[in-house]
Image (tube, rainbow over all chains, first blue to last red; front, side, top):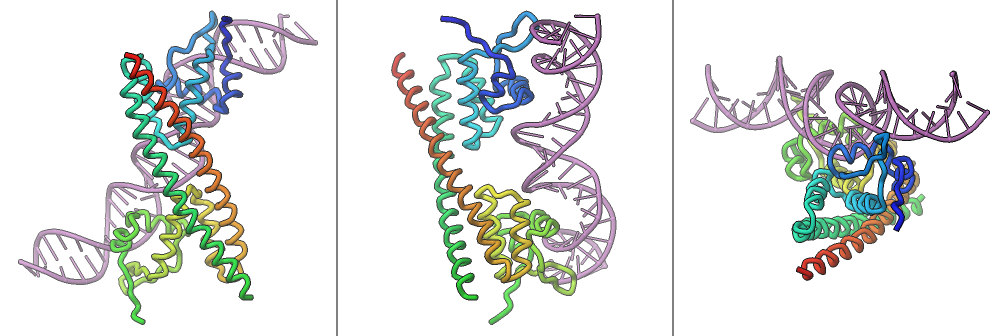
Length: 124
Length: 124
DNA sequence: TTACACTTTAGAGTGCACTCTAAAGCAATG
DNA sequence: CATTGCTTTAGAGTGCACTCTAAAGTGTAA
């Protein structure tokens, strides 16, 4: 099992986050325990990459950074916090479901408005 | 047909926007042509209310204020801009649909993660 | 008539999530 | 051995969408 480390630039390309943002996430504690080489350069592992992808999933589903931080803090405390993490995630799950339903309702209204416009265009 | 005007405070209660935000929306041009009484106080009409509710629908579906402004500007130019408005709205419609699909995909991943946590909790 | 609650404005301030700057060190290329 | 391009840090700056402040005017109730 080879180590397989990646530079910040490679991670940036893999995840779509800028190097700036990766350092920022580390500064605020979303990322932690990132390995350093002899020059102090960051070396990201496969497991860091998975974690970043998970954070991105939380972000695109509308989780606030402060909530991601709370989740990250639990994770950093190990196995004992699994049920706490599950509970946080279940709350988020409900939020995402609610978001989807709200979007669907509003989409319906938008569809109707477009139909109204089409009808008006036909009235020329 | 009675006039039926409303104060900024009443509109705030009806729409959930603060009086501050209502003035702000007017300042940046999302709202326009709001009637004033002899003291310069705003008097909102039923049609203003409908327009505000429509703006809110655009907002909660993730439309940027600058795009809402573009839409509002077209609306202020009257009937001739109906097809332009329809096109803007169709673009937004596609965006909302894409949003819903992305949320659904991510929700699936969240569901799976929760299941993993449950399984780990069962391993005690 | 005095208190209290409302309204107006321009412009400053806030919170979030980045995003960038400056100054410096390290490493491979010509 | 100089250039180019990477890395590091603390801390300042940005853009969005509000949100609030201060000072002033209006309306109603006791």
